[in-house]
Amino acid sequence: MLFKQKDASGLELRAPGPMEKWYIALHDQKQFHAAGATSRIHPPPTTILNQAVVFAAFGKLISQYAALGIRLEGPSERKPRFSRLPEIDLTKVVEFVQLSEDADRDAVVRANLESKYSSPLGDFETTPLWRAVVILPPTSSDHSEHGVDITFYVHHTIGDGMAACNFPRLLIETLSTVDPASKVATEPIVDVPILPLEPELESLVKFSMSWSFVLGSFWKEWFPRKREGMWLGPPIKSGSFEAGHINRVYSPTIVSALVEACRTHNTTVTSLLSAILARELLVVLPDAASVSVGLPISLRRFIKTPESVPTFGSFVASVTVETARETQGPLWDSA
Image (cartoon, rainbow, N blue to C red):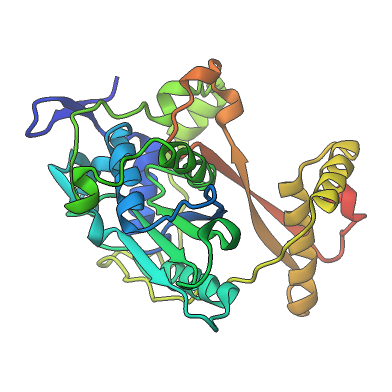
């Protein structure tokens, strides 16, 4: 069992697992900024998703899920730690954007995504590991008809893409039960309850290892290959980057046909998109002999008891697939 640490409340908080430590390191080196998902919510007629209602919903979710109330201590240290926040000021983590009457809605959403993915979300040593942006319709528009766009961003340590996609469902379920006149709606300071943190990936998924793998790992650790030019100096600060985002909308009919075609060819939509991406990269990079594309793999299916799958957490592995220009086969074979 992983070493556990007690916070000021006295309740033991588990230490970050191996995969979580990996994500903490990547965020600390600014290789990742966040996982996120945007949803367009159409509330019932006569319902207005104003700040009071949204704050009340977030406050209720924080009272139910421990991952929404923790921070990181010592993210750049060898042994980073989870710590429970005493309280959360929602005005510092939930941002509201009011659309003007002539605003290009999709352009506003796109600009928000590009901005948040291009820079760190904030100081995760003093604030929770998530952020939200609520884009409200013009004042003359009906919320039910126009819809409200909400983007939920999360640190990879407590959420992957699927966890981010699950959040809108939780929010919609909670919105129907909140009281806009509650304390959190008028005074958006949420007390963080004392809740146990959900299990880490390694305790839920059994990773079997052969003796050859174990012995090979020890061999590489004891007798590493000599690497010419290995950097032995201080850590190198990574440069900044700018994210680009383009919206593409496909009808349910097209999506269903694509999923069925992937099943027919014994592959997945993710694998197909990765194969298409590799081919397109070889087109725009004519001098490249090959390209490598990272293929994400969800590990949720390997958790034996579906009811034990945590709501928040990163349960994704990845494999790097190399596509050589000279050995390209048919698209479906590559997928």
